[in-house]
Image 1 (spheres, rainbow, N blue to C red):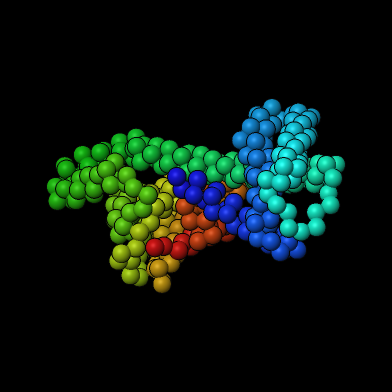
Image 2 (cartoon, rainbow, N blue to C red; image 1 turned 45 degrees about the horizontal axis):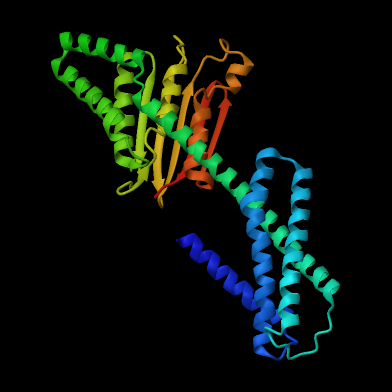
Length: 339
């Protein structure tokens, strides 16, 4: 219904513009309306035949020869029909002509030919533009569906090594300190609940995402004896929302590739600060330069490819992601405009 109304409005505006531009020299109002009506009907007929039938066939078969042939036949047929109709009207004086009209039948045919050509060219152009828009829209939709599928997989995926290590740590803590074991169990339970049940949305409260990061830091720090891990959060994040599980890949990457030196410091640092609804996230970790190739070092941000896709898809130009390696320290920085 809405499309039909838009089409009617367009042709009404087109009718008025054609009436003023093409027949401004005709003083008689009825004559102007008559000639404008015939012209617009011809343009509309050519437009819709091309738009609904000829161009869809061309887009399926990609046959330029067939497109040109059908368009030429259509122009010839329509110009002939409308020339005959106008000649009939003029000959029988069904519409009295009140201005100097000296065209013969050949002139009418030429005139109808060019008017039909306008409709054919318009139909081709509009259909091509709409087809390109539909293709772009489908590509965006496919990217969104792919991103949603990746996010669903990410939410459903529980790292078995992380879960296994957390349960082992929990078992050991139960032998030594039941209070600490109880805290570990609560942290693990909160993480699983958040990952499995609370992330089924496009955006989630930032405080929940940060709580998930803190629990992850706490559980991973238990098993990292020769590594210092620190997470700091500053700024006011009340009421702000973020895409779920967007920051955790950076932290997982840091714990996975952190160095294991005996005589040197090993660390993981993550800082989250908020200023004027803008999130500044920085995560850095030491790593063993000697044990990794140049390719490994340049691709240190394993897992960042999907994160980059999600960021571009969800936040577009409202984000900036950089990564660098300096003196055995890998650092990733994310600036994000939140709502």
